[in-house]
Image 1 (cartoon, rainbow, N blue to C red):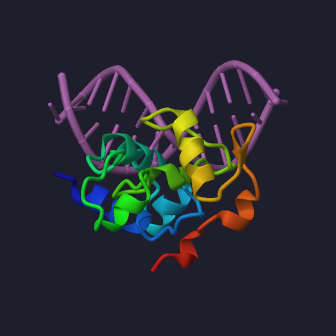
Image 2: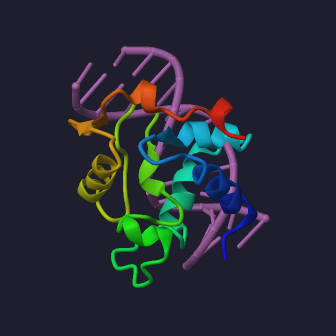
Length: 123
DNA sequence: GTCGTGACTAGCC
DNA sequence: CGGCTAGCCACGA
């Protein structure tokens, strides 16, 4: 079970559309906390981060995109645009992002500032 | 209750 | 650019 803190982070993170990215810092601010690190921690320990590689139910909208975790933790990057970490491996994270239209070069998001989903865009 | 750990950040050298 | 430091916070042992 996610804690209330994690719930908050996840609900915020789910607002990030595909093709966009956000940062640990932005999430923290949006959640009105300074727990940058705790945000990262929530990612690695969240039970919903698992990527569905094999959606059986084709009616499931998530089935169209094999990389559709309930919580899109791959859309979270570091504040300077670098990729950061990922439970399934940095490489995989980059792949997924690329699939969604986010180009990553030298471990950094291209046009990071443009793609950034800043805190005032959260509800 | 305390302690260590970390997918972080910002500042300094 | 790389490396180190001090803050930061939640969580599990």
